[in-house]
Length: 192
Image 1: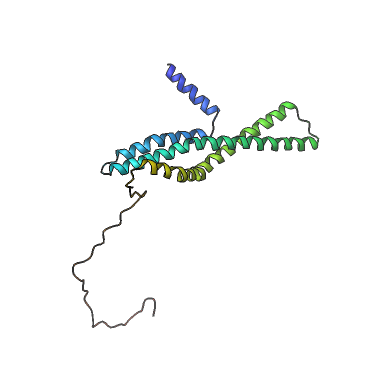
Image 2: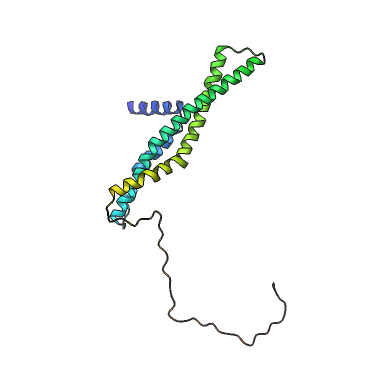
């Protein structure tokens, strides 16, 4: 029964404190485990190529996990500051219009705005990390690491490489019959 309570408490805590970095870190962690594993399980591939590709995928996800966390948390702090300032300005405008707001109403307005600002900018931070920061970090960090780890002979590996189809050359020249007794008469379709 305690395992069920553990799952229940974990789910309710995650639901009450929902952050956009949680699913991204979970996905990156799962990719860090599953993608290299599936790469190594491919049959018929060169073992050195499999090791290289699996290690590259693992390094990418190792870079992704902390990047999601850092970018999300930094943007959440920025969102808190922006929302707090905007709410203070809104409260000042309301008071200038003659509305009297209690301290409880002010704190409720501010906490609601801060929560929305943090959530929105955290999502933007995570999306920015996925689209810009992580690819840039991977292009800077993965290649030097792979050069130090990989064998000196070098592997000619291209991601998503497609082998060109073989070109078939006919052994005999194909001749088509020529019709000499055809007259052009009747209705013309299109053109001249």
